[in-house]
Amino acid sequence: MPDGIAGTATSTGKRFFHLSLLLCVSALLCLPWADLQLYPSEPWQELGRIGWGFITPWWNDPATLINALGQTVAFALLAVVLAVPAGLLLAMYWHWRLLRTLAASIRAVHEIFWGLLFMQIWGLSATTGLLAILVPYTGIFAKVFAEIFARQNRQPGLAISPTTQRLSRYAYTLIPQSFTELSHYVRYRFECALRSSAILGFIGLPTLGFHLETAFKQGSYSEAAALLWLFFLLIATLRWWLRPRLIPLYAVVALWLLPATPATPDGLFWRFISEDIWPQSLLQLNGLETLHWYSSVFRREAWPALLQTLLLTQLALVLTGVLALLLYPFASQAIIGRGRTAGQCLLLIMRSTPEMIFAFIFLLLFGPSGLPAVLALAVHNGGLIGFLLAGHSEKQPHRTDDPTGLNRYLYLHTPRLYPGFLAFLFYRWEVILRESAIMGILGIATLGFYIDSAFEEIRYDKAFFLILITALLNVLVDSISRQLRRRAGAENMEDTGY
Image (cartoon, rainbow, N blue to C red; front, top):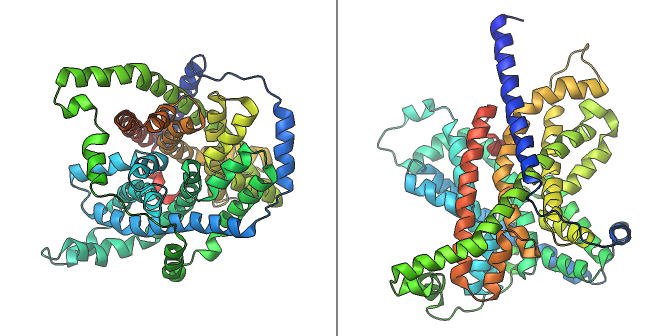
């Protein structure tokens, strides 16, 4: 090997080693401070009941089951159908700093938190469910579409008159060039929207999550299993039923399936955004009292919750990476051969099950500490990254003298896939942080716990302040993860779904 190439390879290897070491050390430092307490329980007995329910799914009211599934798909489909053109429009003007800041702000807030905010205005309605997914997804699409456009060849655009409108320039050059990438990402994001739609049931919307939470709380694990198997089937068959030419028909049916939106009292929306979400002292222009109020809430609630959220996020991030690297070979035909079916099914279940569902199950087993959150986040994200690694493993070129089995996994595929693995792991960092925050809805002491409590106490000013802190934290972590992805050599892995 030439000296220059050898030196570059050594330098790259050291960079990846240092990044990996940094991750592991950060997780070890978090261990003593994270709330990972195990509460006295009988986990094996409960786990046995859950396992038996999983292999004996049963639902005695098929109409309710189909309706919940239909509403889950309806919220996701309509939100994505509306968010895609909105995201495209924002991506065309991505050079505006104000617009980039707006997109970063709205995508930093989790769908559940958006749902809780909109619920105070429109209640448990179609408007609440749609906006809860539509708003953050618009910001996500804008960012990813802009990055896809930035990588396209600008040469075709030179043939168009400089006076041509921006929309026309994009319609005739950049959009056709990147159409395959755009469509692949939209399909991937629709799968994410299905999971988002499902977990909106945890705050009362009539999707699969509502019935799942009820079934788990009542110990009706066979009913919960029926819902989960149906959801797995929905995700697994996505490639066959999600056809572009059928989307207009699906959208019409989705509109018909959505629940009604009751009339909103006059002035409620304006009162909510101009009065309810701000402390009384701020409305009275009392600066010192306002400063005292914000500092008091930050010191007593936001700061400890923020620390716990970060600690659990870091532990979940490292465990995610470990699971992904351990599991992906079992789903790769290039490594394990024909026995990959079992591994593929396992990864499908892991990536298709929303983190909130896993967390709910682990809470039943281990009690209300941070451990269920860490395990839930790691299992879901480990399954997702493992699935992507397995897919790219099968695309690797091979020679007749390549090693096989364990040696192929350790010395051939994993080194080749490691840069992309690190890049996607750092991308998921911000996603894991958002999910860690909403684990508080289930009683875990993250930011979501205090946000949910504030809504229950009708303290909208406190809830909004805590949501703003969550958003700022996400923006900060996203910025750090982008720098780390750049060091890993692939800062735009999210737009390819890898």
